[in-house]
Amino acid sequence: MSPRLRRPAQCRARRYEDLAAAVGSFAGPIILAGHSSGATCALDAVVHGLPVSALVLYEPPWPVHGPLAGVEFIDQVEALITRGDRDQALEWAFTQMVEMPTEVVAAVRHSPMWPEWRALAHLAPGDA
Image 1: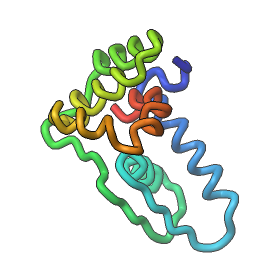
Image 2 (image 1 turned 90 degrees about the vertical axis):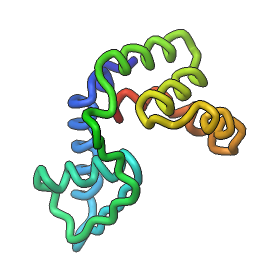
Image 3 (image 1 turned 60 degrees about the horizontal axis):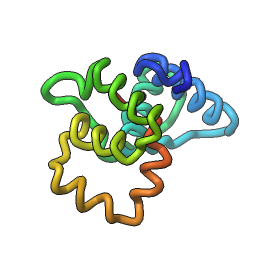
Image 4 (image 1 turned 135 degrees about the vertical axis):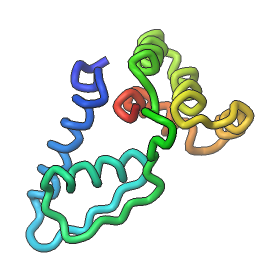
């Protein structure tokens, strides 16, 4: 696992840097849109001073009952990825972080999106 993705605060800082660089490469008013953790990232960036003229936030994962996940979640996902078990890492992220019912995860595994999500499973710790 990349050290930059080791803990959520570090991951958020890196995403902010990337977003600030992208926004800074455009002239004129910027409308920033984000979905899921991207919505959280966009809002966090604006709170920290990123100059945008408008935000479009779709399904940000707001933690209602406390943090989405703790260090133990991150450690478990990273261990699964290190073992090469991206499917299990993704299932763990969906059931433990998103609180998706296991029967729904089982159905989602058959969707056309599963291979793309599996390829991005290493990013889940940054969304915790």
